[in-house]
Length: 367
Image 1 (cartoon, rainbow, N blue to C red):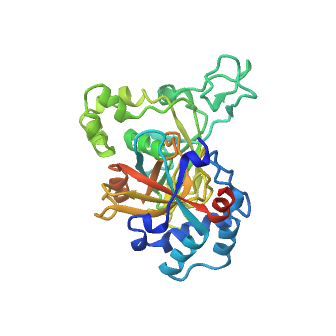
Image 2 (cartoon, helix red, strand yellow):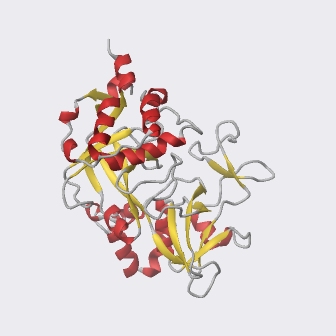
Image 3 (cartoon, rainbow, N blue to C red):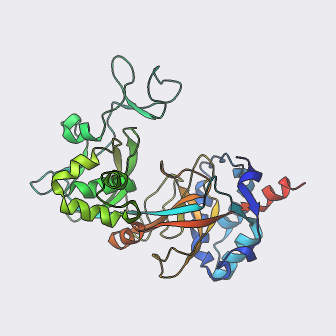
């Protein structure tokens, strides 16, 4: 799919609710990316939104913060052109993610017996340069062995003790389902029993494909597909504690974490774009197609979980995920803690995506 196949030019007047949005909140998220790229530029996505075209917008954003919503709105209108993103098929789709907050212990106890693990020393990155013949081309990680790379232990093997005794435990949780949803979200705030507040965030994964418990439970006839939410999945696990492993082990992917500071409690973890996520203003997109730092205006009128009114907001592309594939597919960061989880868990709505493309790029493409 080319630039012209993916995008169709619009005006800001075509964006439903544009005038009523809080552009200042989006500007502050954009400005964090503007400072990060001084250290390492973002890679341009395959759809042709070239990173270099952001130079003027980033420079102005770094020079001075916007003083008001109107100034922020003028900034985006001055530097960008809205482009409707065409889905490959059907309609665009948004889901939600969040940063769980759970109680944890620095040591194993009778109550806290479910570990979060750091990256093992024998886990290696794998690509076409070092992939053995016959290894699944999907795998991006593998296990170092004397005979060369091999598929890593999957979730079931690890939870049955494949990595026990290696000192990988960062913290211990009380509930296996809580741990699983931390794996799904890729980060968490931990309220430690010794009084500390700390954070864990994604470090690596075992490499196998992700299989969501909602899909498994739907195929088993336990929850109708249209009723699958994080809340309904949790309720099923509470009602069937003896079947948790049966369902979760069908997701062979396993996530490893690293410790990180909580520098600003109002912001989320540092994600794929290497800046802290902003609740309600950061979006995860398909990294292969889109360029981090791109503003996206999302029109999802059936989504009311955030503010009890239709969701129409400007967000900044600052994360990605293995389930986020396609040009009009996004994952909205809802924030940290239980309240954010209640929002994120029910978000699955059709949406129109408008990418704000730098004006120099649009001008250069016109005949």
